[in-house]
Image 1: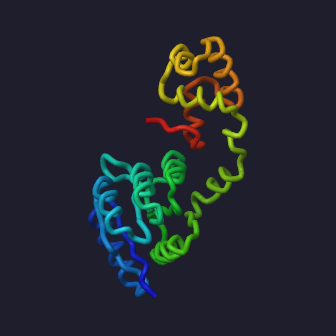
Image 2 (image 1 turned 60 degrees about the vertical axis):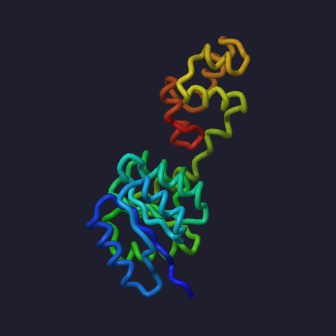
Image 3 (image 1 turned 45 degrees about the vertical axis):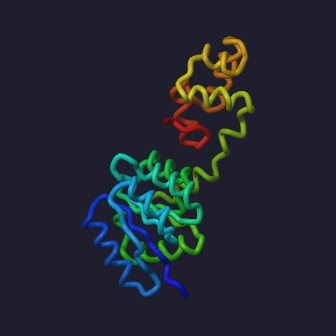
Length: 211
């Protein structure tokens, strides 16, 4: 059986060296490349197409979420396992929305990291015990998008783009009064107090992207 090919992406050289040493000690794992910044990671992963990308969240100008999104677009068969020190909702749900297949924290035991690589390569999802409950809770929660009409989704996406009610009305060929009605319905359905909260909630749920 061919070894599992792993690409290591971390902005700290000492971490890359430690991970390479750990993984290459396993007969069924092979490190096929490494990179210390996001741009190089995307470029080289697209070229070598590893089985698993072991990805840090802080990768210079191009962060882990964007790296994951680009990799999944260019090489959709590559499985992405995040290994990071950050466990905030923004990082966690951002990279999961981008297509990550697993999320571990860097205080995980070495044997846990090794087994996680194998599991992700086999098509499974792996989550650190510190974030698993939040992931399960988010998956079990109702999808906010299900309660929004097609028109409300259009309005919400334009809100996320920073468009005013007047601009939204012009773009959708509806009156400003109608836009205000849609915005009111969106706030109520998302449980938001204002437009900003609505856009943030929608972004966390993966309904819109904030650029």
